[in-house]
Image 1 (spheres, rainbow, N blue to C red):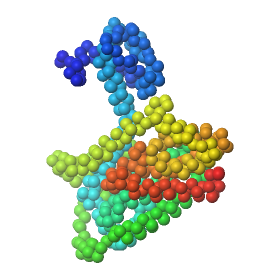
Image 2: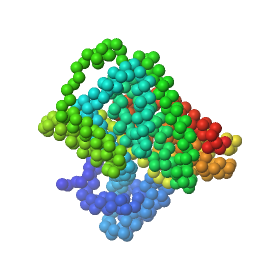
Image 3: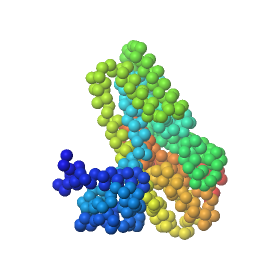
Image 4: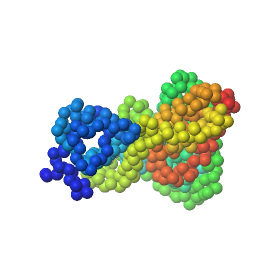
Length: 474
């Protein structure tokens, strides 16, 4: 083959392959900087390193270091088009390196959605759903309260993915059959997760412990009364929004009740019990946490396909039917990894610059109450910043700024972690947000319109309760 690459009808000769190979090897070992593009060929021995500030996303050692270390580019020259193509190549590779942080979640989402769609297709949840719907009939409030309680219990292990996979696939058909807005399902799960995620093994409090140097268990003990208030708020939201949905016509009509009562019970064959055991076993193993989550669902999806859809033709048909939803959320998750990487990479990163700008705009008169301001704004800020960026990037800056006015690191950390957790399900940079909206079959924009105010109100109430309890200093 005469040419290796051809872009815009300007081919790169195949003898430049060693150059590209060397650049790739060096890129994996150390980030590099690309020299300015010249109109003529540049001898490699004349290329000098440039300052990292000229290219903040590709900071580096320079081309002469590559030549000295590898000795592959000796007595060769790199043309200007080659340098331009290599620059683009490095940018693409750096973006794909950030995708690696979301790969496991993307695989988990793909196979979990396929698995639960298969289980719904074969009717595993139908007997339980019909029993609950018959029992509650028009009691939408009871359904909403049950959702909160299941999400709270499911999140005792601190894993948001496990909680969502336990709660939403079970309640989503019930909400659909009783004509309840599916955004409410995601909201109730989100508030419950946000409150329960303040345990020391859930991650957020552990990050605050690392930044402040205070023991995570001690921080959690301080947060327990605020958690209690948060659970009460979650139940109140379930009651209020349940009444709202009933006013909007949610619940079973008389025709629906008659249809359910007159319907003949479906005979349960051996496949039903095998599928039920498979579903319970999958959730149980997932809750134990001894195995990688996406591996569990890969195996479960394979077994479900073999048990319920014998033959390659049927298996291909069922996968093609459910694949669009699964692959769409997977692609979205990978794209979010690129988004997070763009915002969070570099020294200083875009997120760091954003937080520094916001802090510099704060008047000195309000700076004495910086921890309260950040606490009250932590819910909307939590939608923008990821967990690591917010608690490892913004929190240290706020602690440093607040220390000049006598604000303790403990008060700053507690105030900022509360609202950020409550808005966890809803943030475009948080992986589980895409899992929740996909399982509930809602759009992110619709969910944010529906849930933004109650999420923010919940965080404000929890902050105020912390002040009244004396946990957060004024």
